Image (cartoon, rainbow, N blue to C red; front, top):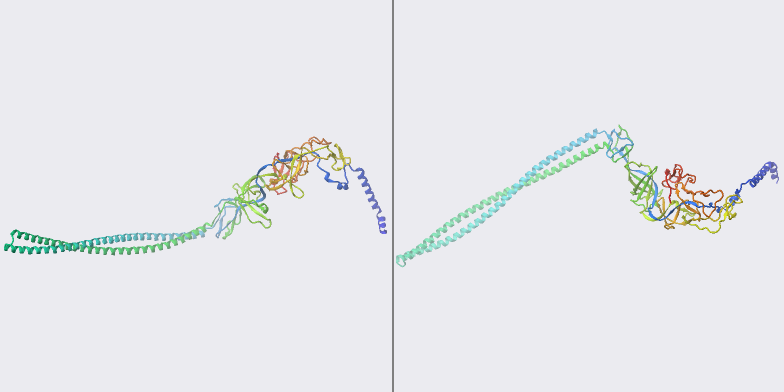
Length: 631
């Protein structure tokens, strides 16, 4: 206590100043506070749930849903990658004597990029060409020798065939001579038999003639009988002589045919000897031809080896002329003329841009339904008018373990040079085939505190009974007519809100999206009128009025609800509630004139601004947009 008393005595002037200041402040607050003003305690204690939007229909943009053709897509930012990045390297050692291209030059396939010193290589090539020519001459000589040997072999084969024909003819002649000899011998034997018979017959008649002569002398027979036996004896002798003549001829014929057989046998032997000689000549000619053919094979192998050496030297010599393997653009020149380069030295960097790869890293969750051949719509950053329709050409089936993404690639032609490697693009990739579905714009989807999706639909309003007016700051103040709040002086507003059309919440189940619209699988039916703009601050039963909207917001505000009389200070055709703004908009549109330029993001149309800039969602440049949403 002594300490406190001492403190008060020491600081009584300070304590007196604080007490006077508090008393003065309390007096001013109680007597000078303007109507409707509240203390901090009063503001904290006020039931804010009773505050609401002033009476009037909120302007909204609507869309009646129906089954439409829908292709689910995912949108990702991507990069332009050169189709090929090629290092142009030296393949042989040499001094760089000429480099007619420079970075930035566009070159065609086969165009000369650099030239190396060719003197040493040219000498080696000439040596290889001379060796190839000598081998070719040797082979041609062997070919001529083979042609000659083939002619000799054909001649020997012809002679052998002639000799064999002579042998066959000699055989036939010998056979014929032998047959004739046999016939002559048979004839001689037949004639010999005839001689024997004729001789026996002659002897018989000679004996008869001698007996008849004796009988005639004895007078035993007549002379006529003697003459008859004499005649028979003469005839038998004549026949014997005739047979002997025939035998002599037969003997001569036998001798002649024996001579013919001997001659035929000799001719056959001679023909066989000649045939054997010709056959031996054929064998010799064949052996010589085979030897020449073996020599030809060796000569051919030598020529091929020499030609291979010449081609190898020609190829190596051609390496001194360094050309572009593909068409493209020179991006770097790493050496200068006069430099001694070794095999493998990089001279240029060449980038192929006639065809380009558009690559996007797609999240694993979005890969379902993406296949090779799916359509891809590509928007180029900084050029909204350039849209490229392509298809998925490759999917790198290996997710990045860090980002959990898969690279999706589309190869496109770039003959006009509209794209450049490293450029930033936006790729809209189809996830499946087109189908009929109910869809709504993404701006129509709202989510509650639990994250469940819902939409606001326009339904007919129902308002019953007399209108009661209350103060939004003091809900206990109620009146049956408009006026001022006696506590704060604010305008009284209807306690029961309504109108011809009101907002009604519909919980929905969402499906796939295409980046602008989303599929509604349940919760909506065809014909439902969904609020797509101006739905940010709506509550169940709020009066709404569908009006025409533009990029910057509603083009005109609706008239106040018919159930509400004009309130003091409210001008005809205006609304006490400010026009709602999209929660994604980063610039207020209620102050933006309808005829003022509006800038929006091509990938996030809900982002709008009255001046150029970058999209806060994706970083793309905002682009000037014209027109609005007509419902």
